Image (cartoon, rainbow, N blue to C red; front, side, top):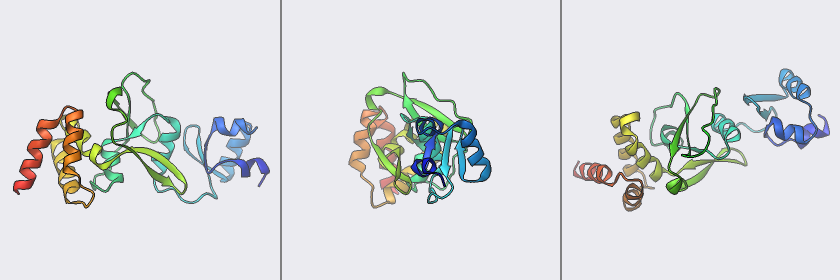
Length: 196
């Protein structure tokens, strides 16, 4: 393996490779030889790198570094649902440009700038490589906010699973619900859950 190949991080973009002096024809030759794997347009992973737990999230994070994994994708990461989203769901600030990513299929939601960082956390998508994702608490509140679009049954089942987890923080859930203008529905759902 050439020195320049060894200098590439496990996951990298065409721009990163170009910065190290790798010509695009060499990059695509390495892909065709199986030395690297193309995760998304312009995003590659070394074939000798440790397996990624969430390769799609890793690819999307490299394509849209300012985005945050949210909604069903975040719920799946936090083991709050068994439902697998048909597309990686990401949040971007309302005034930013919405990324267009065909592969992996991606759906972008526009979230308000004032609360965009509320509940922001990270997960390890591959050994030593983290991606931004909303916390379990923020994820539950977002699914309650978007229940008309993503489905009430999903929102309520994620809430129930969250409440059964050791990490459940009902007080923080209500705090986030208040900041995200969905306090009433979340409070009612909590009341129903506690009555069961």
